[in-house]
Each structure stands twice: as C-alpha cells, then as structure tokens.
Image (cartoon, rainbow over all chains, first blue to last red; front, side):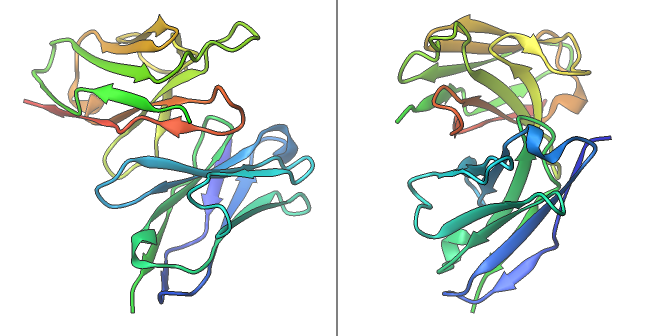
Length: 113
Length: 113
C-alpha cells in the first residue's frame, strides 16, 4: 500500500522555522516528485514547491521563494519541507503528495506568540 | 502565471440530482505533447485531497463512474450524475501545464440539501 506519513503538529512563535517530514512507503521513492501544498484557514489549496528525489532538484512557488526549502533523503525515503521566518499567516495544514496521489495526512502548523 | 477560476464557489444539491462545476483557465492547458494537464480533486471534511480525474476526463483508481470530466483548451467541467451524501466536500481543479509546478482553482464547496 502506498503511504505518505507526515510528522506531527507543530506550534511555533513568529520568526521561527518549522521543518516537516514526509515518509514514503509502498513505492520506489525516486519514481515520483514530492509536492508540498498549503491549506490555510478559510483559503484554498496552494502549491508551495516540489522536489525530484532522483537528483534533489527543486522548484518553488514565487510566494514562498526565499522562505521555503524542500529536500529529499533517499537513504530514508523521506522528504522534508522547511519554512522559515514564520508569521501568523503561515498557520495552516501542510500536505505532501507523492506525484498526483496519494497525499500525506497533513501537518498542522500553528504560528502564535 | 496561469489562473484557474471555478464556478460556482458553493453548491447545495439534493441527493440523486446532478451537479456540475466549471473550471476556466487563463490560458490553454494543451501541452505540445498532446496531453491536457487538468485535474480534479475532492477534499472531504477532515481528510486529505484525493484525485478524482486526471488529464481532463480519466477517472482515477476506484473513482465511481458517476463522476465525469470534460472540456478542452481553457474550459473544463466536472459532473456528478447523481450526488450522494458521501460526495460532500470541496472540489478543486488543478493544472500542471508548466511541470512540475501546480496551480489550483479557488475550490467549490458542495453540500447536501
């Protein structure tokens, strides 16, 4: 069974950095891009970026460029998304996806002082 | 940047009745490889998004045949032939013409009358 399992909920202060993991199982990790998507309260899905696990090449959405780093570790079949300089508007659920489907269960990040 | 505009943004449907969601793109989603990179996702309450339709009209694995997708170029439609209670949630169209980046529509909330 293909599964993407994400790390647990996080609470961070403004200005901090959060790093979320996405562990893949059930398929060859390097076969599909890993995407990251944000779902903020009252908003729709927003693509943040993507990594090709084969070579680590990334592409980021302009809105997150400079604050987001996406990586892939082929030794553990795990992808990571790091978001820095957190502000209240970053409070959201963050999803990873292996190709088009399936998606991880989501990780809630709350930014609050 | 490609913009996807969905309509309506909310829909209340009687069980057993049909429903239709439109997705219009700011530019053609027909790639030079002959494929059209338009997808439909459903995010049920409390769940991660799930792929319904890929490349305009292809139902994903185990998606009921009451769901169908159509369209070409810049205009696309998702139809549910007979809405069931399990179909409630937010429907998103998504484009990936400029692989590997994604863009989502605003989402259409479907509820049952």
